[in-house]
Each structure stands twice: as C-alpha cells, then as structure tokens.
View 1 (cartoon, helix red, strand yellow):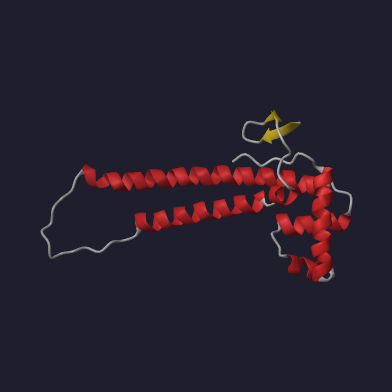
View 2: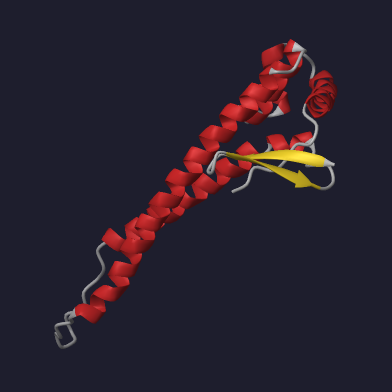
Length: 166
C-alpha cells in the first residue's frame, strides 16, 4: 500500500510503502503532544534563565581570588543552550501552527456538523468530553458515543493517517 506523507519543514510529499498509518485518535492527539513539548521547552528555558541571571551568595570569609576566562565557560555554555532552546521553541511553534491548520482543515472536511464541532473542541481546543457535553447540550454518555462515531468518520474520510514528522 502506498501512502503520501507531507513534511511541512521541507514542503515535500513523500510516497511511503507499507502498512496503514496511525489511528485517528493518535493522529489528532499530535497537537496536544506538540503543545506539551513546547511548554516543556519554555519551562526549561525559564529555569535556565533564572539560574543564569540569578544572584548567588558570596562567601566573604574566604580569600578573594580573581578568575579568568575558564570561569566564563559555564556561563557561555548556558547562554548557548538558552539560544538553542529559543530556536527549538520557535521551530516547534512553527510546526504546531502548520499541523493545527492542517488538522482543522481535515476536521472541517467531515460531513456531520456535530462531529466537526466535537473533534474541534476535543483535539484543537483540548477540552474534556464533560465540557463538550455541557457546551453542546448533550449528556456525557451521548458525547462519548458521538466521539467514537466522529473518530470512525474521520478515519473513513482520511485513510492512511501518518504521524507528523518532528
């Protein structure tokens, strides 16, 4: 079986031979996974900044010794790591925006309006099914069943779902 995979970084569509792609739920959850990765990188950068620019204690009881360039090596490594993290964060955000746009378009390409709304709220807005049930004025149980049906419709509409290449 041949499958087309689009890589937004290279803007190339690749033909891959092999078995079926991922399930609809896994495919749609990629947005949430990317969001988590971005937030973790931001937290890592924040932690690094606080260690980099924080004030440390000074021990005045010991003899004062002037240090030269070797003492700056650790500082420089932290600054370089912070800049690398900033670039990683920007790249992940770009990938997130591209993937979000693609997934929204795919969700909107479905036929049933309730399925479109449910999948949008669940996977793009990251709402829980309980919240969605309240918003759509349905029972939680009905929304669970509709979620299963919406995933099935998504899978039938978009066969050969492939994981976004990070």
